[in-house]
Length: 148
Image (cartoon, rainbow, N blue to C red; front, side, top):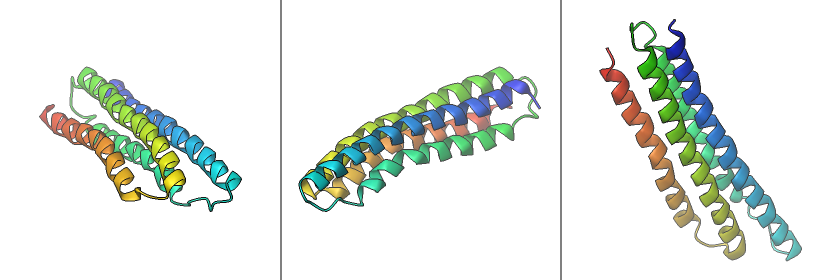
């Protein structure tokens, strides 16, 4: 196996996962704070906030999919540097999507807990942020198909 190809694949997964960890952490902290406000006000704490907490996890799956596609290209001679760079940049793009999705999810937690309204709007907005990660994954797979 070409070490740079494998390194690129692992970088893609790792950077995607770091973004997911940051994004879920941001959203979880906001959910906990929102629940605390609900309890303090004697209101029921909305379970739906867990939806927002979990949304940035999907970017780890996109990084994993790319990792498997990249590892499948280890037999291509001379592709190491290209694969390493693709893995790094794809991982950064996917990870950044997760971070910003987590920031937006934090705001959604606060808004949902305070008003009890807008769940569909918040999920749609978070889906738009996620679309960036999907685009990165798809376009990277297309680029990987061009490496021969």
